[in-house]
Image (cartoon, rainbow, N blue to C red; front, top):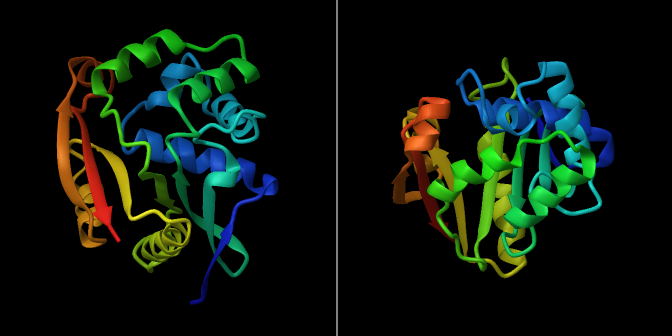
Length: 207
């Protein structure tokens, strides 16, 4: 089984939106995009996230930040990597306002004002590391991460981080097997109330 890793393009936006939604929910009933887009149907939610991947403002969900894994020309996995000095919280909020006037930015800001790690702007951030059901444990995520770390090193980065929900034991273990170390946890009452998880953990790797 041959796995191909490539950069995402505008033609991939629907697949990216589906994977972003899947990753953000992480086995929960709802995720942050349900909150942001006021609990609309999954179909409409995917459409809105798809728009978010192509905004003129380069937010962290922008398609240009993604790698895609393919098997036999079928998209089977994603990994987002972005520079926090470019894809800021402000750029995300501005992107939301660009695509819709009916967004719940107040609750988003309330949640993450409690859970923000104030990450170093000189690090690279990984997010939306996800694979399609039926292709789990065939090496997709490991290859996506290896490719992304290689690209990051060529850009001059030596440290990368990822934020994982406290209690997502499988995801936490996977990052550890890739060489990441947990460096900080932040428990947030608002996050617990909304999503049923105690908060967030920050993982870091030097390469």
